Length: 465
Image (cartoon, rainbow, N blue to C red):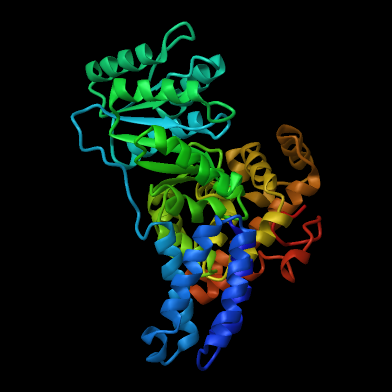
């Protein structure tokens, strides 16, 4: 995410990082490029001006003059000001209320409110161990009620049914009473969206807010609308006492204008980022981590947290013991690794968080056939347990049966078997331990020359298009 902004800022700052000393002249030149990068990223003009002025003021002061490495300190100043622009620290939900604590979501049509309700319910249930009830007060879009019912079942949330013949205020009041009876900790109310901000919509949502007095009123907005997102949030904020913002579709946003503008324009913190379509794709917003990623320094803290939350520890420990004892790494182990990687947002999601790997993530996104990982898993599932444990058995008629059963081609299966063999060799090298051995093994999994490695039947690289 924010690839174009990250690339432009990294280029702008690269020239100054190695400077032995900073002058007003080279600071001025770099800040001109930074200013252009932010404007191209669709950051609001007043926000850009304030940011540039703050960096300049700090850069020509004592912060840099006393430093042994001025170029590096200048980068740190830019990072700190980026964090300040976005809100300095993570601001979580305030659920300190007599249960059920009500969370109301507002926003324009198409921003992703209904999906975000389900994501938030899943997050609260899994991370905070809360019992969550969800309800749709969107009586103008019948599909919205059905959509929320389906998503609630998927994430295991309690769903309160509503009907397009009811008034939104009546729905919300009845849902609140239901949540009390069910002893729910949290009630999340999904509201109707419109294609634009209008008086009728604002009056209805204000009435709804007064009826349920939510502890959190969150504005859901599409990050890809750039600084328009901040302006729309401001318009909603004039009608509703917003407590925060949720930016959706952030994974597809290359510019980053909304993330950098919302806090300054609205005065409200960004609390969560929607980073994909899956119900687990909602991340708490950490300005410091995002600033680090934008400047190409990665986000190891988020990666570590993801590993903690999403990796199946029992399976990981089982594989570690297996490798340590030098036992064979079979196709069932390989399938487990594919599933674990998928849980963490795939290979691009992991690369994006590693320091200096942002460009590699972009390259992978452009060149990797992401559906190939799914096909690999389907092929493994089409094998018998005996074949998964003994891949050398997979020959001739067995290959034909597996590919027919998984709807794939023989060359796909050959590629899978080759990649598994490479992983098997890597695991053997790891028997004695040591990260260096693992990294040498991983080199065999990467295509030669980055994006240039084709993944045909003869190629041993990752599954490329």
